Length: 267
Image 1 (tube, rainbow, N blue to C red):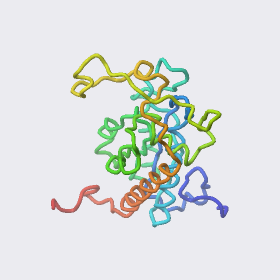
Image 2: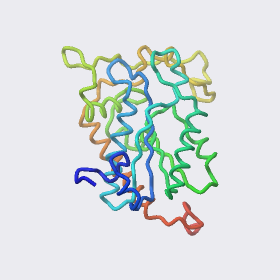
Image 3: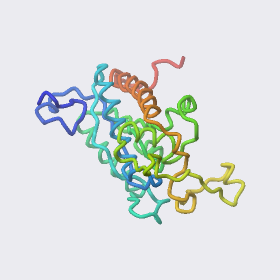
Image 4: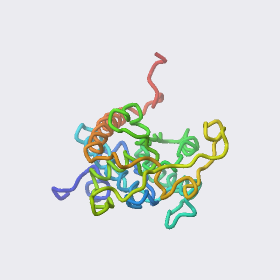
């Protein structure tokens, strides 16, 4: 391969390399194409999934993991954004079938350890994991925005749901040229306020619904973005890379024995 090819990125590798490569773990990043308030691009989830996937797999590869990163899937479930322009929806059943086909391709190539790296809150892959259970592979799921909840308040000031402080910080750190600003340099965004429903049980979380974002929000933002900084985005990325690189190395080195993925004892 050319000297500048990154061997942990499948899209950059050639057949001569791949046919002889030791690849034990595949990472599939999943994004979405949807509005993110007035200041972030429609491809925010795609950029996040790609950037996080590339940095995590680079670090895992450096530590010795036999890992490859697949190209990011740019579309996700947008059924609750149907009334918003160009929110590109893939129905859950369709997306599950698509991913299952990719999993079959990986298994046919001898890769039986697979991580879904999800960057879109509207994607729910737990039912898919149950559907795929008991076959010749083990599929793991990481919603990266959930894996940092234990340290969220040490970096960020405001709760995050969609296009708020956390996502805006990542954008400012890694694709700032796509963040819209006003002439004074401030974000071209509203405050990300949301409406409650008229039902106490729903507002308390006892009863669940799918939120319709055109009614929930003013401009699709849910979460205050104006406290975001590039430094906060870089802090978050460092934590994600460290945690997931460790996991991918463990996954790569773990034998596919009869107990996988469980420990060899009940202790």
